[in-house]
Image 1 (spheres, rainbow, N blue to C red):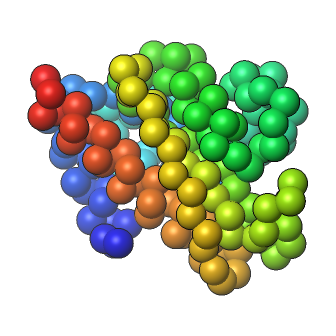
Image 2: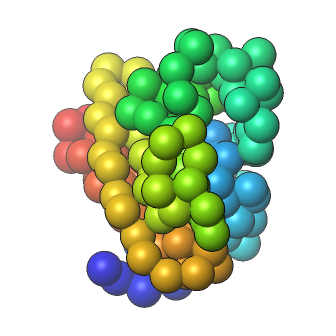
Length: 159
């Protein structure tokens, strides 16, 4: 996995080059992903914003997550689709998971679901990270950035 700084630089360049706007829905990372992107070069050109929905109730009310476990593929996909629409972005990423140290909703610490929504397609991925909560958050941000970069680059190629 590439270093976070490298991923941010590449994502910023790709988004600016393609006029692709980005939105974020995050739970587990509680603003870490959006603050990382907000510090990126030229982020004002392409970053639409973020929704930090830490509680399950907020995920359901604001992002339309159905009555499913908050740490699930369904929840991550719902979050990504809703935030893309809500913020009028071309591409959105969502993260939801269990940082630890204990389990949540039957999922062990380190269990993370990430999803991308492009308006024409959606995909999700599950990761099981080890380590302390801070390491889980760092790994989640890195994977989310890599997924977002992939989505923006694919969009650029298809334009």
